[in-house]
Length: 138
Image (cartoon, rainbow, N blue to C red; front, side, top):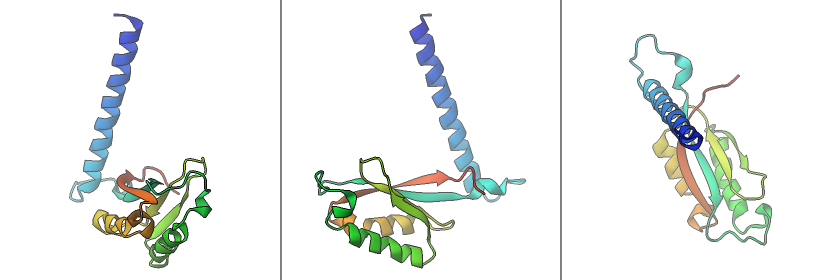
């Protein structure tokens, strides 16, 4: 076997194992009836990833984007309701950001909230809701 084929097969096997392990964690985290279940694996959050949408103006900074203040006000409502743990923009110049709800906010609720964002409705931002297992915390 050539070195390149070996590397590709090794990487593919590692990815398959990682994906399988991640799936196992998510399934075990969702099963509240599992005897001896580790309670630390129960914290699944539905995070919102924002990226620039079609209305994003490349010649303007994040704070200069039309509609960004309405976006911030929208998420302050979630914060004031006690349902937002963390949120903010990425600082790498690509735009977008991430919102991390508190534990217990359902995927349906956070997806609805993300889609109701004025910046998403206007096309300034695109929102993607993804399940995230909190694997480490204080």
